[in-house]
Picture: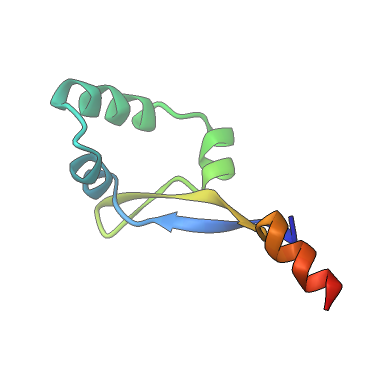
Length: 78
């Protein structure tokens, strides 16, 4: 592994996420309820808020930079 890091990645709209993921209406209702009741700690940890009438949040996006072993080995030999 050459590099490993996390970066915040904004999820711009809960409803967009539901549509993209094909979330059932019953699960959407449950998630909306949980978001409405989320404790302050969850709001802070996820950056959970409302912008322009949309629920938004931030995910930590994991980025890994690797090299296939045979490529790495040949690069070291040159």
